[in-house]
Length: 315
Ligand SMILES: *[C@@H]1O[C@H](CO)[C@@H](O)[C@H](O)[C@H]1NC(C)=O
Ligand SMILES: *[C@@H]1O[C@H](CO)[C@@H](O)[C@H](O)[C@H]1NC(C)=O
Image (cartoon, rainbow, N blue to C red; front, side, top):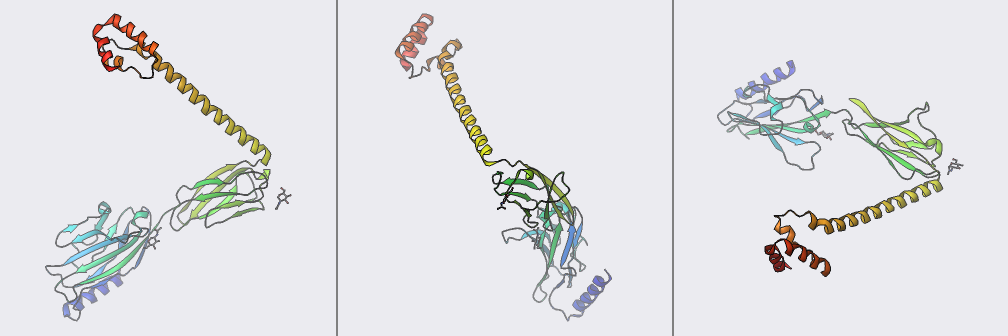
């Protein structure tokens, strides 16, 4: 702090005495590291004699963004504006930022705040007019709850891969273990602590069981589990065949059942007619056989002359 202020005094002295003709921006801390949820200050000091056209501007480029589009997050030209998505968590440390300090404070930071920030001071007619400085914000995030998956057939003699994936910063490293055993991993099991995969080669039945993945970084750790059961190929083939067969049979039964119900419903439909529902009565299916149609006609002509006339019109 002492250092910052002495630098500031020196710079403003320099500005006043006139041997600096442009705005000069100083970033005393180029990289700021903060834990998610904490409050950080992004520092920006400048030297100039604040005039009428003095402007301070902060812009943000998200660290993981594919675009190179800077977002304006703070703007001061006599009035202050906070147009960015961080507005409610952003404050200017010295308000108004006209005394050589344009640092901003961000509260409750998250991974989305990670990235590059630019502080820009513009003060025409200072020679050159503007100065700017860059601050990197690195947000430390504990590993997210990972997802565990198993890929490949868990058949004796074959290989399978278990995968584990989590996000966090710094990038988590992964460790696998078998649940309920003392030995961490058996021979033939190869873990990749960077990608999070566990390769199980030449599967055998003792490799059946529950595997736990732990994703860890300096902020904490999180785990997930996946269970596999290794079976001999033939049994597995039979089981798979049976499952497919049963599924097919179920689908066929469902289709037949649906068709049956649908036809019955259509057949029964006229019996459930509301007396006043002319539209429904008239909607005679063109699929009806002539006998059915004649039967219906005779039934209805007994009831109402009007209606049978209507129907004759439609049919
Ligand atoms: C955080 O931002 C820095 C740039 O400031 C970038 O290098 C880094 O990859 C970002 N980290 C994440 C997790 O996005
Ligand atoms: C696979 O494991 C079986 C015993 O489970 C062993 O007999 C065989 O030699 C192994 N094959 C390879 C290629 O390691």
